[in-house]
Amino acid sequence: METDSGMRADSAHHRPDGRLAHVFRMAPACGLPEVLATLGTADAGVRAGLAPPVACRRVPAGATVLHEGGETRSLLVVRSGSFKCVRMLEDGYEQVLGFAWRGDVLGFEALGRGRSPTSVVALEVASVHVLPLADLPAWRRDCPALDCALQRALCRQLARAGEVAEMLAAISAQVRLARFLTALSARMAEDGQSPHRFWLRMGRRDIASLLGMAHSTVSRTFTSLAALGCLRVDNRSVEVLDPGLLAAYARSTRAPGPQPALAAGTFGEISMAAASTVTV
Image (cartoon, rainbow, N blue to C red; front, side, top):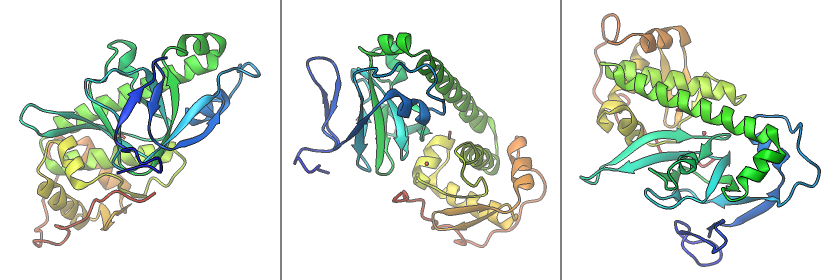
């Protein structure tokens, strides 16, 4: 994929001054108040005229903004769109470790390691605020609100990493998927969106990789939860019909109660393709 400049959209480099220099299309620069709003914090305490302006980048769908093992010199705050965090295993399998949406911070591992332990790939057209690590100490000192907002964002992401561990602890595929959908529903509510009707931005293979299942099992499990009356699935759209029942499955380790007989292929070919337009 190429940008208007003719350069590959999935390539990235750093300028000699250490600032992130992705070859993605530039978006208008903004100030720290907009970054704080993205992080869900009021702009109290921001000094007037705090410079330099914060760069914004538009990211094409499928582009990699951080490369596994690559040097990371900037934090990226997701402004819009969604991403998946993946690690390439020795046998070539792409392991999905989580998803990121508006308000999440990408590349924070660089604060301790200097390099990214994962690759981060855009699931759809997205945009990010770029916070150069070289400037971050001064910005955090001059703007305590930014420091607090980043800490809260990282705490939220650590909590979601714990949710992924809880998903994988379940024996039943139905329970794993129920926990995933429950967490996704809660994230929709946090973002001011409907917790009962939402689009899946990730593919079924990505969901399967995150949950430790075969992608065909994901389709069958959607079928099963739909047959139980928990969900209605229409291509990329998921409607939670019975939040209480879905939550009951999410709270168990094995799927509770009798399981319905499934008609082969009812939802077996559900498409989980990325939406053109958002935890785990």
